[in-house]
Length: 233
Image 1: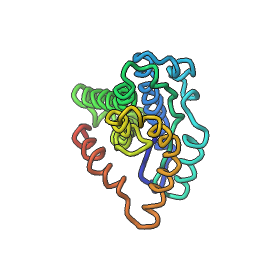
Image 2 (image 1 turned 60 degrees about the vertical axis):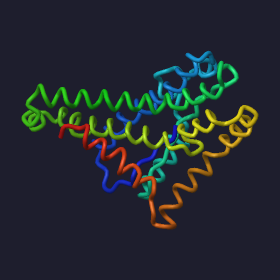
Image 3 (image 1 turned 120 degrees about the vertical axis):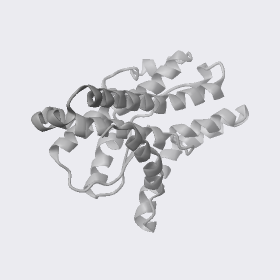
């Protein structure tokens, strides 16, 4: 899973805490979605590697999940991050191409479910409780309703729309395996192995060098617009 976020201005401590509390389950359940799909399709590789776990440490890549995002944040650049790729072996699947597609899309599907759950909670609170009085009287509720919930929904929408792009190494590129003739699948998997560093360099450098941010524009049209329709306030 690869994650993306726009550069931020001033950052408050409550915002950082709420962001971390929202981001951790978003990436953990995303990775577990990949692992669970592979396991259900007959591949024990991810389970044997401990990736069917709610423990964030099982999924965190020290550089990709912690060091690189912090460096980019300090430089006020578009923030990228990635978790450990979930290991799986398509040879276990009855239909490797179909299995690859299901495993690839299971992660974004987990983010979609989380965004819908967060939205349902937000609307339930908005409908059943006096939001204005609670926000004004309870600092904890203020942070939960106006910081955590919106960010939790939004980060899951970011991960959903970003990862379904059909570009290696993103999850959406699994559609290539679905249509790829079987004899070319080994070549496709080799390309996947080297795609991440090339992809990160290109997407981070393009906005800085050319002053154009196509990923940011894409997320504005998709994730941000959908969030504005989903969230009640």
